[in-house]
Length: 519
Image 1 (tube, rainbow, N blue to C red):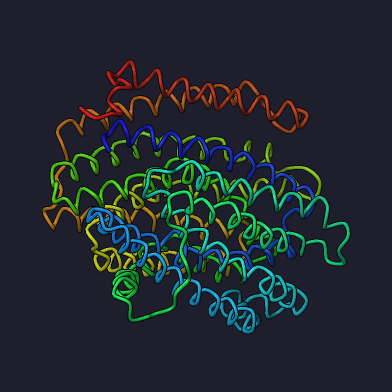
Image 2 (image 1 turned 90 degrees about the horizontal axis):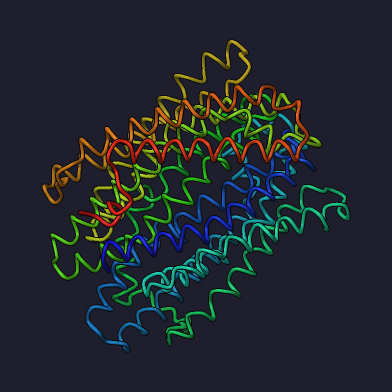
């Protein structure tokens, strides 16, 4: 696939992801209006975060990173029978693993909650609610893992649209559950958990048959000593840390946040949802599209094609990540007030969410660059180097979180949760730097000429974006003085003004859209 092909595939993936993010915003609006931010939302945030972290291991994170390069290698050998045999046995092993983990998670839910959110032990009702919610959502892990297997197969065959649109079903299922089911339940917040479980079923039903159209729908076969299963397993083990380092850092934050005031988990959850918008729209899209391409270049021993694609990926990441981080930081409170502030979600909740959003947005360039850099290692079936970087990153995050949060917590300073967000953002930047340093030390990649000009253009355009956003924000004045519908229109206008200023800044500094295709 050419870089033009990579750009088209990324655009398709991003367009489908945009639909998902729009549906996700609607979901967050409904959730904030019905449940606000407090103890019960804290309970759901913790319960949802645990299987969501494991999803990074058994689904699109660790598993996909090990599975896709092996699948690409087999495709290059042009042996359909061997490819189908590999899929059958990997699918069987994955299914068995996630069913066992899901079962154990349901049985040990109170122990898991006590470990991840020790602060909830001081509130028996909150602890029980979190355990109950976790039991409901844990089977989602098995469903989404099998869905991710299907998505990885389809992506490897350049079928990006359907896997990218499946999260829309997730959000629609949760929205329907909140609106229709929550009024009928004794504990309304459990509707969120049942919606997540229903979403897993819908996603699997959509994607699994799609493999049949490629003649690759697996028959589940369990043989753990199968060569393909063993190879994927060996590659997966080191990626358990590296592919989920952001989620690991969120787990660290969850532990610390459980010791803070009620609402801390919720504020971090809502700010993380906003951070996920550019990550999913651009970072995940780029990494998903570029991994099969890099894997094929590596399998063909095409060093020039490999380096060229990676250079393109990093340039594109920074072109998108820096303005995304800047825009979120500058519009943190207006965004929170526009999207979440209604019903049970108060102005104070908006301010607390904005604090953690500003702090965490610092890490967006690191989060996005890490996804592309990880693909560079996984494409060569090198999973140990990212693992070492991930371990160091988690240790950095723990140290930063303890150093930033402990004095705020002991001093009872409002907004202590923002220290957790800042530590997460800084750890994201550290992870990207560690991966970059390792790649350079291996002498397997060097930057192409023109990076200095590229960064200068991004800097000039970012200044234009900041000026436009600040001027527009000043013109709007008090966002809470406007009705909900007008807030949305004004926010779209401010975002459009910032995007236009950034684009014009790039053009004025000499950047041209054709450069997205490479020199």
